[in-house]
Length: 374
Image (tube, rainbow, N blue to C red; front, side):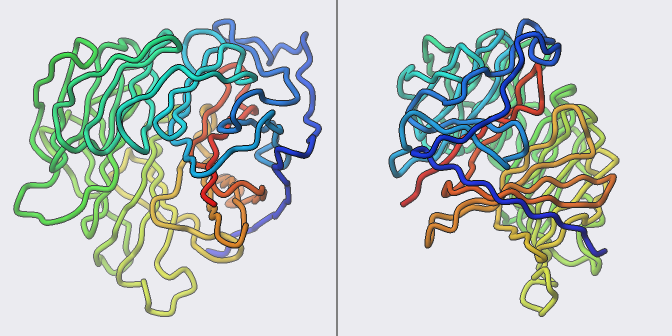
């Protein structure tokens, strides 16, 4: 299916003042959820790891300091505590208490390429793929013991922050009801030891931790709706039924039946098709079946494992990106609208955008965790 594309250009230079639309103090959208407000600053104060945009990346707030290499801001969450946020810049935990306008250092967290999962109140869990796990707040870092040497994803119960699950070796799920202090295995592994493959990602339904989607090499996607007691191999990822590598996935926070994934159809790769087998897929049945909705080409570049950020209130919208520090090419932020079957593109000068979060009071405010590679 041919896609419609609109390309916009924006430049994110910390040395250049970029005018952003001001947030009106009396705007109802500026304060509408648990005391959260949209940011009112024109410049973000901090080391340059985090910034924000109000218009899908057409204009991006400048930062008081230029980001110094090599940095990957891989974790970024808005907390339930009003106007508080956390970010992971390499292994440095940063916090903001003013809706992302000012960022300060909390301390160092064990691990590398550390991600964050909000846990209610002012807490979050920090984790990496090597099994490092910590409970973090804007004031302290508490190391936890992981149930697995490898972690491919973590899910937190939206109603109870002490209840979390981890996807470990072989896709085995582990459950904790006491904030990660003790663990027990639940269900069966998504991939038995007889299957030699790589698990690239595991994502949990924020409304139901029994609903888990895993992406892997060759097999594509396996999904469970009963906490790992049974697993189903997803259909629709390849027209020929051949092997597919699924590198990243995301479940819509507003409609858990909508699941997004990025994969490589191995039968198409190198065969001369314009997409080279690279697709963004969408599922409307929780991950049982998928349909390709965006192909590589026509201005869209899909790398292995791109960041996928579903819109927090609109299940029809997905953000993803492509960026590289090579030759100072910068980053494209893509917005796919399934209702219009359209991708819009906005460009910035950052090497990469490695995490995205949304303001709880006003989802038009999109926070960007950025990277400096060169």
